[in-house]
Image 1 (cartoon, rainbow, N blue to C red):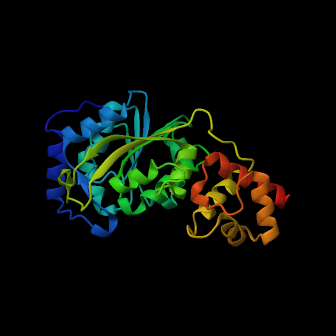
Image 2: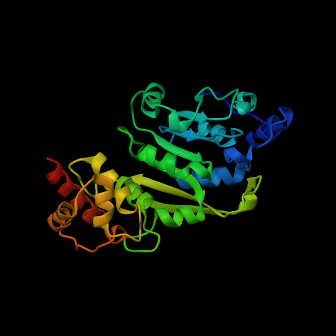
Image 3: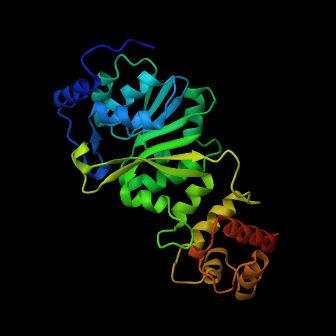
Length: 290
């Protein structure tokens, strides 16, 4: 690993942004963290180790990337905006354990890229995500054939509350159910709007989701189980039976049979079910389909 000398990584990032006259693009959700002290605190909370391989999504000006490089064995950063290429090239010029891939993370073959850069071993995710694609990225990462061992990301406070919501609560939703099927979420830090450049109009939370070592449920068909979760919350005012009919093409009799087999009430709404009950419903649909 290369040596890291003065000027500070924060100063290098700020100078590079100014030098290359980079202007943040609002539509890409570019709210950068440019405080070395704050990022250092967040990475302390993430409990990174020198053996870690890290996938970073949205490196922005590269300050977090440079600080990750100091702490970890290998960093793979995926950046959508090619306009940041000269900035990242300058800020990361002496980070020989960093590779920047330019592309849309939602269209990127993450598994192949991670296998190439990390040698097929475990990897972690650390990111200050663009908020408008938070859910899409999280759902993609947690459904990968080789998902990360944990995900440490910045999200809106409201998104964090939804992710950590409980069954039968007002905020219990498909996103929470799918993410809690993957792992256990917790808040690491709250970050005020003024910590970002430019400041967003929301308070943020840095959260960590640790992948379950032992699955909390074991559906017979994982893809169908994920479909069932999304169907259960598709129309919150409708009963689960009606949502099943719409999503899986079941008739009334079949929908009732599924719920009876799963041991849940006929008039139940999807948001009232926990992961175990949702798993039983998905398995019952497998029985109908077989």
